[in-house]
Length: 165
Image (cartoon, rainbow, N blue to C red; front, side):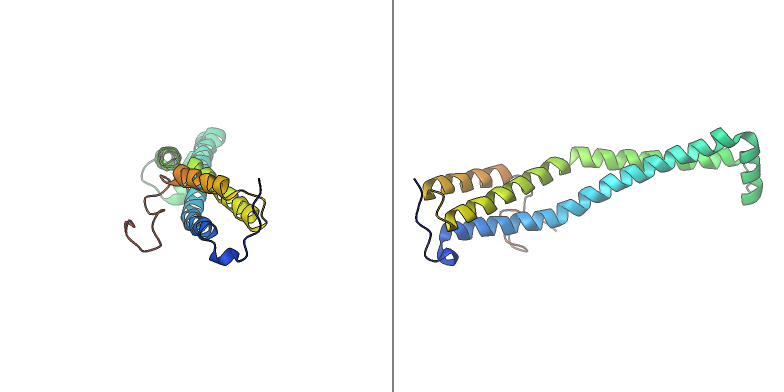
């Protein structure tokens, strides 16, 4: 059963709740997407740097490391410096990968994007009179339930209670 289009969608409390939730998800995504991108990029960059740093003496051999030691005016063999840099790069890459995994950023971003799309579809369905209000309300409640644990501040307006900073 479909409902008639709402005479004034801007006055509909159900649609307003959907818009509020989408705005909350948008705020979450504005923070989470750059964080995800930074962690992925750091992991790729530093793991690649570790590989390149270790590859240089492996392919260049003793002549390369001796030349690098002289060029940099080092008092210790350059391979030691290269090994230290490669090790540090590997640790940073590993930390970035672990932060991405343990904070579940990928899963949270995927869930938020899916919920945001669902809310937009629900809102349009209500505005166009294609959804029953009861079914739309149930879908909204389910959406709230599945996104409630994405971020502790998600259920509160920006800067409101529940924000930790």
